[in-house]
Amino acid sequence: MTVTHAPPDEAVTGYRHEAFLYSGMAEFRSGTLSFIGRAVSAGDPILVMVSAEKIGLLRQQLGAEAANVTFADMASAGGNPARIIAAWRAFVQDHAGHGAQLWGIGEPVNPERSPTELAECQLHEALLNVAFDVATPLWLLCPYDLEALTGDVIDEAHRTHPFVVRGEERQACAAFRPLDLAGPFDRPVPPRPADAEHMSFQTGDLRRVRAFVATRAGQGGLDTEAADAMVLAVNEVATNSLGHGGGRGELRAWADGRSLVFEVSDQGHITSPLVGRLRPAPEAKDGAGLWVANQLCDLVQIYSSARGTAVRVCHNI
Image (cartoon, rainbow, N blue to C red; front, side, top):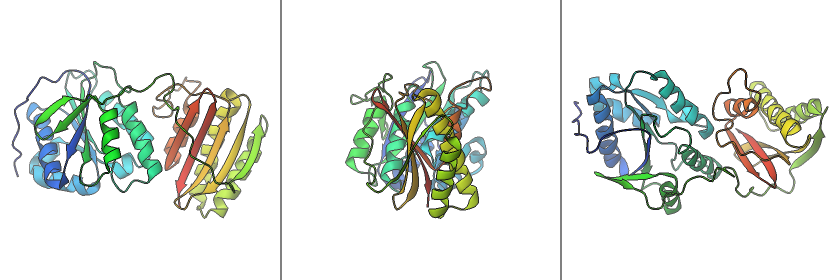
């Protein structure tokens, strides 16, 4: 099938982050194919990160023109939402210096997400607004299914996107609220189970930390590879506590029915909004620990304010 290329309704310059509101697959197909068609007709690079099912649908509709589109399965690229910004950054860097307008479609929010995953997707959407310079030539479209998602999720989409699209209408979003850069992770820490296992640690205790995690990971049913990944991830986060959180911390572990969770808390305060989301430069002294944790774990949650920090790393069970 040949896609009808919609004529551009406005010039594309700089970075633009839009929420695309649609109802059902027919509207998804129409809206995304129109967007893709604009990129393809201009000969511009476009990256589409959606579900495998939707990738199949778009490939079928695009026919031969699918060869001009880069696709990525969101379940793999963004199962942990903290990895998605790095994927967009890599896309931009791959085409740096070519003078091309870049286009992207990313749908991290879907009804299959757990409440904790959804919260991290929503944080990711807010962080996208500070992930790129205003001059970056990237037009990013984020689909939201009005039929499948609850009203509060749609409300949050309005708060995290400067622009909103519905049908053929694009407009600035009056409900948009920029991220508070003084406290990007200042949000309430969800309650911990009363029976969560616990240990305190300080300088010289990392071996005990690793042993604690290895034991709980084994008891939680993780295989050797997953258990080793959790040991390394928690070790990295605990090392951050020793270096930046007052030289001591608290480690807790529990299972929530879906995931095995390890929480490291300390008296530090994380204010860098993209920490753990961008690959640190080889010479960088900070940021590598949370980057490693995000590459190893199914979910990493950061809660941080002047009152202290809690980082939760999770592996699905």
